[in-house]
Image (tube, rainbow, N blue to C red; front, side, top):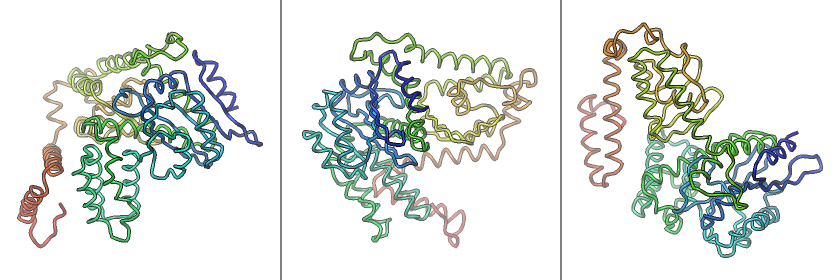
Length: 456
């Protein structure tokens, strides 16, 4: 049944993609190679740097996702940079060689691949070197970051130490200069017990060749790059990594791909498929659908809320429309990230969020509105407290005054100051850090007392 669905995807696609699969004796999917015409065109335009990401499913099968990388690639969309999907029959030298040979047969631009980025657990490097003899194989910055994050959690470090290491890692990945990498290397040597330090392979931080492939990005570009790969990895894991059935996982993934990435990226780039088929009529419709959804949300806000409430929520929606937002959904909770502010939304009937706006006013915040937009839903009357529904409220000042508390106001002021101080401490020199830390230490001791150790 799942293979039938896979084949139906080919029929529905106006430009039929490459789909080769091999069945086992029990009629289960044993190997697969997939590439749409758009994906083939993207690789032909940007073949210089190939990024390989692997996703395992509960049955032990592994999905290889090939993505394009490098300074010339400016593609938006969660999977817009994906150019090939493959499941080898076995993850051994023979299985990978067969997979790479199929990829090369249908992509003549493979000869222009200069660099291949892989994860630290990729062991069959000789096979990769044999199939791409002129390409340099390097560890990717993203996979090193994920590797170190996982190790920090596995080592069961004290929470303050773990928090410092994670913050320093994030900051260094967004500005991977030789100096910052050396500082992180020194920090690991200081904070990690000597017996456990070899597990982290911290010498990777001093391998300048690895970081040259990533260092050209600015801090903002690096943050956007890592966020994009996080979402890509999450989508792949959500569809393939959690489904025992390889066939159903791939069918769901390819359906998602057709609906969310290819047409948008193709339309924005002005690329056309290699066979010169005109873009499908449905291609440019995706942005219009998003605009219609947002218009529906605006209409529901104006219809259900009081004027002051609509004014506040429309301001939140304007932030969403101008911001980069990422959504990862689970069974009970939805994680929303807008720029650098991460909050947790409870998507029940009366949706709630951990942000200050929702906690103070009990109104749909930018994070809840993002969730509604992503689900193509509009605001419902039961998502508002009675005081905010149309015809009940007096003025914006009255409601703001009634909802905002002095405690919450103090909490917000402290949180903003703490964030600002944290940013200053992260980006100052070691000498300046020690001086400022000493000042904070004295303040904490003078307020709370020298007999109680204050954790900074």
